[in-house]
Length: 173
Image 1 (cartoon, rainbow, N blue to C red):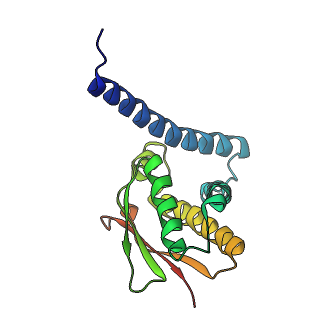
Image 2: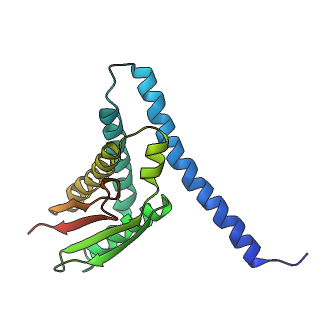
Image 3: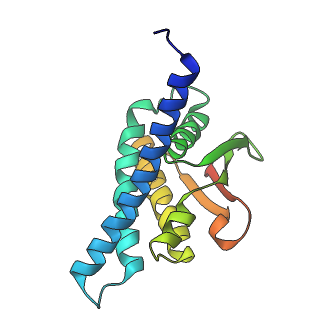
């Protein structure tokens, strides 16, 4: 039987998307389990924010080996890490140059997390704040690692009906 490259690529592509979906479902199933175990007094936002904080810490650790301050484009390299991470999570994301060399915009044109959040009963505000917490924690950890005043802020968010998530990543002078 001859090798069919298109068929193999399609098969791998489907498996990749299945893995992305599974990762998001796992997160929200974990959230449901934690809330059930904690009982009626549990605050879903508190549980989600703690989870995203831990995700942010772990994400930053994976960026440390690829963060090289001796290169002039180190901020762009960090932004590229965010793009790659979120593409692996199923988002359509890109980066654009900011107002100056110390600023980059990260733009999520599409993100599957709000849809998954809805499916599992999480609010859109929980989705936005959770994502923000994960990103801010990652940036805080990278700032400690690099000894730079690295910051990130959300300018627009899909779950708030703003069409895209736009985040500004910059180094404060």
